[in-house]
Length: 373
Image (tube, rainbow, N blue to C red; front, side):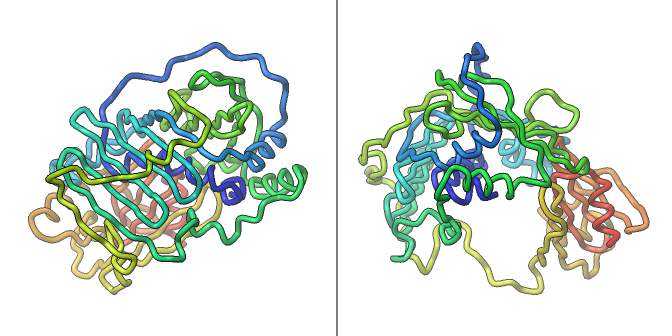
């Protein structure tokens, strides 16, 4: 969506919502406090979209709370009896964030037993886990300096507000209905609410609600509502925010005494590495566009004898436990074949006996339609 692609600060804020799922779990700290609805001058949806695209915020810092209630079944067995997977998609997580332009960012996930940080300062990227007293230092390539991501190549800023509105509305329509919700107070700041609603009823997403700061025009709260629910299945919001450039010291990191430090280079990226595609790895493709896009992965189904293993290819003791957990999912069949179905409030996953995995924020019927094709 061009609203995000043309504004670097917005592209950075959205991944903050997923940062907890990248660097670990957190501890519940309560719920977002309800505040009185402020009185604000009327603004149309088109005007709010212009606000998002033309905001000029140089930096911010604050505390973010993320909550998720995706309505998952008890699938802790999928990770060998641990609770890592369920911790990432349920409960409440607290983060501290700092942003000072495209090449200076920091996210700290707070935990009752410590914190985990990801810090970028120019070409230097540090990850830090206080519990294990371990850090990884990754040096980006020379061409990465000053670049927030691959989207920069198509980030042409609009010349006029009308051009910004035209681009934003062209990107959203015809798949999405856009409207203005109720005004709100978030982190002590007045905000407008932009409401996005998929037109395709095959989507499990009922609405996205974005609270936009009335003065600086940056998102302060992001909520996703599932079809049939009046409570957000996912939300991320500032509980405290300062909309100014943080001190440069926030982006400097020196490992404490005794820390284990791992050095990485631009040719050897930190964290999970990308492996070349092989016959044993899933073959990925997407079907459809917009809200009802379905991701389809073809795995190696050779020798598959049951529904769970057909889609996972799991072997060995851990793989057997994994396949056993998948085997406990509801069995489904149709003219597309047979398999197992995993559903939540905002997504459905179909694991077929012939070695396919289909997933999306869509109804099971949409997955069956794609599997049939």
